[in-house]
Length: 251
Image: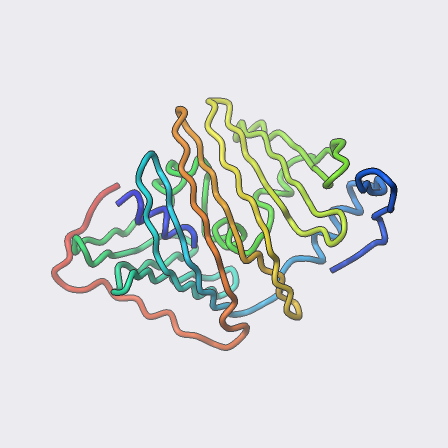
């Protein structure tokens, strides 16, 4: 069940800032405001998005692999279907709830995002899950962001006093793609999300490789997602119906 939830989740504005030197490359320091403006320009614009992905989940000494299909209606809902030669599960994310069923145990769940949030050390909702999958910074504007020194990437940091979370975001200095975001809780739990291999198609800018690392009590769960864009802005349906005879579970 835990591995199912982990699989379920997994679901250019150049500014001529790189300077060539005989040593390692560096970049021109710019204002935090200018960084934020360029990050905003990178946000994907779409109505519908269909992604296909291979996902591997490693926890302790166990490893599981799945193929998943993701259908996203922007800021409205996400449908995820998982398979490994045969269909395994299907889940639907909406603004106020999560529903899923799995075929192996003939079980289903209807509820909120609290279990997922506990699993990955972050308060998730529909928007943050969509942002995670599409390479956007999570809870980015909720508190003051300060720029720190780094000769490889632009790094913005912040501390959320309400949630008691330290936040750190790293951006590519050429195209301002999000490269990594990390969230540290006061109790030692943390979540890191690393992005690579962006695919730019029109107003779509999506990472094709996402690595998620969730650590708590010295136990790290690693999720690697290799994604391909299948369709953009072609209307798709979101069929979801829990089969009869399945048992409801509480998490």
